[in-house]
Structure formats: structure tokens, C-alpha cells
Length: 97
Image 1: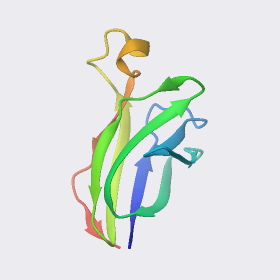
Image 2: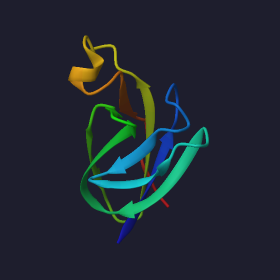
Image 3: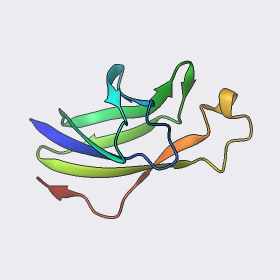
Image 4: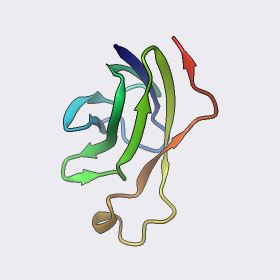
């Protein structure tokens, strides 16, 4: 059982790495990067060295394609303390692959 997580890099560095739960899936080297992941409840975030984005909870159904866009986090007052200046935004539609 798997799903596809499509990440639109936005303002993130191409060296940022996608964390899926505690696993490093790979860098966001392209403007849009697809990752095949297990379905279920998971946490995603981005890291670059010791810096991390805000963690986002996702629920993925078997065969689902979930589009997420990285954006700046306007709520971050102290980005290092609050988890970073980046967060994920869920794009309009999910669909089956």
C-alpha cells in the first residue's frame, strides 16, 4: 500500500531534505519532486543542516497523490525556536494515481 507525495519546492533551498516521519527521503533538487511513500498517518518536514521547517501531519490513502507546496511561514516570530520559516500548504485537489 503506497501513495505519492508531490512536493513543490517554492522558496525552499534545493538542498532541503524531505523528512517522512524520521526517514530522510531525499532533497528537493527539482521544482517539483515526487516521493512514493507508505499510506497511513505520517509527519513531514524539511531539514537543512540543523534547521527544520514546521512539521505537518498528513493522512495518505492507498493510491493517493497528495500535492504539497512549501511556503514561507508568516507566523514565525523566532524561526529557529518555532521550527523554521518554512511550512507546507496542501494544494487544492488530491487524486488517485
